[in-house]
Image 1 (cartoon, rainbow, N blue to C red):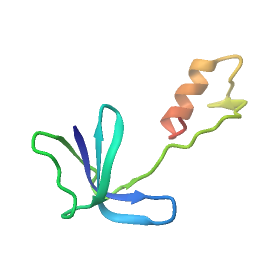
Image 2 (cartoon, one colour):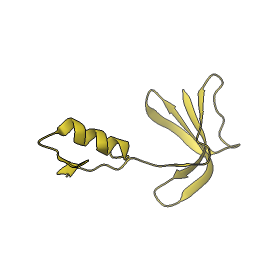
Image 3 (cartoon, rainbow, N blue to C red):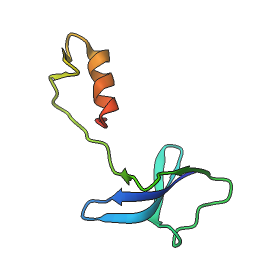
Length: 87
């Protein structure tokens, strides 16, 4: 179990300041305001330092990234996209 604390959590219709996000096995299992959501004992804790946490952008139609065409240099293009939050 892991907890990301002290973040502004970007939701579908709002932003939840001072939030906690719990994950287990790479999946989100719970989220809520700090102080109202219990972080399980033994969970790894990552302090988000007040930054914003939101879903990654999914781009299903990309031709190029990082100055290269996807079909020519897929690894380089994918690396650029991942560094910019595209999953």
